[in-house]
Amino acid sequence: MTKNSTVALQLKSLTKTFKSNTDVHIAVNNIDLDVQQGELITILGPSGCGKTTTLRLVAGFELPTSGEIILDGEVINNMSANKRPMTMVFQSYALFPHMSVFENVAFGLRIQHVTPLKEKVEAVMSLMDLAGLEDRSPHQLSGGQQQRVALARALVMEPRVLLFDEPLSNLDAKLRVHMRTEIRRLQQRLGITSLYVTHDQAEAMGLSDRIVVMNNGHIEQVGTPAEIYLKPASVFVADFMGRSNFIKSTVLTNLEGKLGLDFFGKSIALQWDERSFVPDEAVYLIIRPEAVKLTSDQKTEARLEGEVKHAEYLGSQVDYVVEVSGDHSISVIDYNPQFNQIHEEGERITLYFPTEAFHILPQS
Ligand code: ADP
Ligand code: MG
Image (cartoon, rainbow, N blue to C red; front, side, top):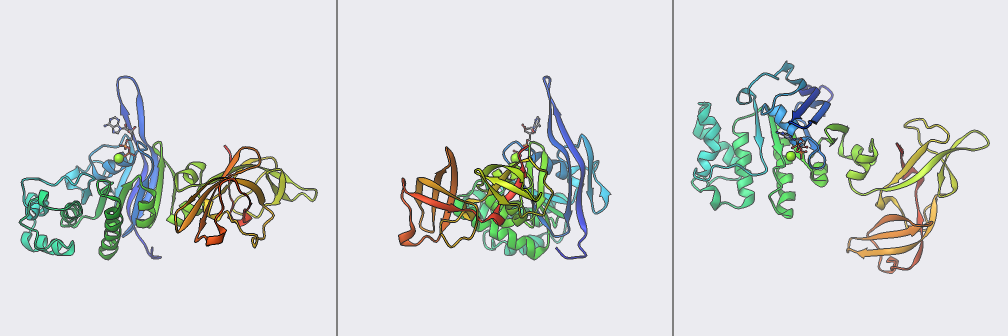
């Protein structure tokens, strides 16, 4: 983001409840979000957390129960969906099966009487690498091509904001990665403000300027992929974004009054300045599997002996589960393992925990 960035889309205390005979369900719970001009933000979270509802509120397919949707400074709560300068790309491409590719892409332009129609369609077809396929039917295209047609159909409208609802979920794993790179490249090239919904962490990490992690209708954290991964704001985020080890600990005070942390019965220095801690506070020491080291050149006072319970050799990495101190298990990933450094199940090894790699969160 540049310094003089401007806010394109704002959500203010946005809330949506669904009422049935028996209960009231808060699908979107008081969320605030600023999307900058040209930014791609993903809304990430488990199934049912309110991602699609948020997107549908922005698109105008649902009316908010309370709160505001603001586009370029104007409240658009009451603007009908077809007046909003936004287009949505869906998971099921929602192409019209009996129309040619050209007519599928041209559809929105025809409805809104936009001209010059042919030139606009051809330009976007060429942009999407679809030139020459104009006369085909959607069923004569591969999954990747169909997805590109769906994208072309959205882009041809030159929307102010592009909305995506899990657009790649129907594609196989390899094509998904390819398409997400393509979407990102295109989005950056066109500088188009985008809101992208997914439940796939890797997709969110690979695509986004910033990620919004949602849980149960509310926002847990908004941040860059690195902030979300390395400085999760909550236990939920740490657990949802990749794998984490959660080690229960307590904030200790030594005789000089300095704060430390309990690490399996031993006191280690607390080198953390992001927030203050109180003595006796119950915390988690959170550490990623790849941050736990297996070699003795690690200078750290936090080390543990354990027994390898599970070892999975995957070529570029070995995944271990190591049982330490009673029945506590630690996940470890050793990247680029050397031939003579692969440990076997049943082996006793030492784990080194670089203390600066601990991320500390309160237990409650
Ligand atoms: P996500 O896209 O994150 O999987 P949704 O936004 O689709 O989640 O749904 C959030 C919650 O709201 C879910 O519990 C879902 O069942 C509920 N919900 C969504 N749409 C409706 C609706 N039209 N009527 C009642 N409940 C709904
Ligand atoms: Mg959804």
